[in-house]
Length: 284
Image (cartoon, rainbow, N blue to C red; front, side):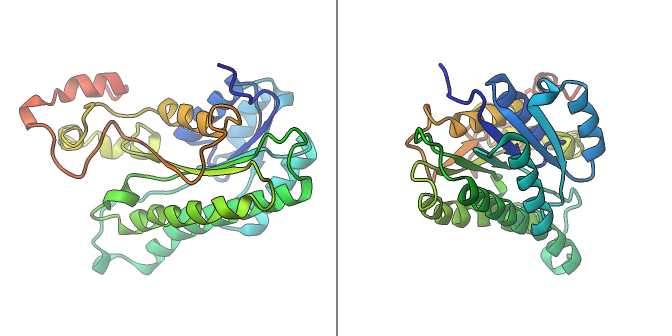
């Protein structure tokens, strides 16, 4: 199926991370041109783009920006416009997660603020910069709407003991999505806003937690599919939601990619083959 993304421009934040790289590869495979935003790993990302990943260098641009700084993400959006003429799709993917579990009463305010600055305010500033870009360029003449997709987490739905800062930052995306879906159409009548909610996904950020001895049985017992997501699973969902053909009438929705995860145990411990799950996820 033609998803209608050929030569459209997608800006992806957090593009140097595991899900970010998968997003870049998935959009490139659909023929999109890419503005890839990173912060600490920007130099390495720029080198990869110059070497032809994930597409021909003239079709991709690596941009440095700390999303928690509105001026930096606005500058990156303008650079993408200058290079490609416009930005059609924005995937708000940049985020941080502190692997050290801390109960709220023991959590330093600095930690909570740092998480919210990137995950919540960074998401707001990125969306703001994208809406400003749409105001400058206007909708496409053919009426194929733009799209704004946030990458959240099941922590925003179920909570996460020891990581309330992260859970709060992701839960806030529900309100953002359901507000912006009604704002973006005043700029581009066909534009859509949606949220992808991954569960446990094999990335560099999560690998440490996933390799703990009891992690796989504990996680898999809450999932119908008894497997972990990959970055590609999340990226394929994002490409679908960006599509002006396949998802033309989808807005304000939450798409959960978590193997049927529920907030309760679905399997007995003896029914979990942890070694097989690790092998399939590339953890062994």
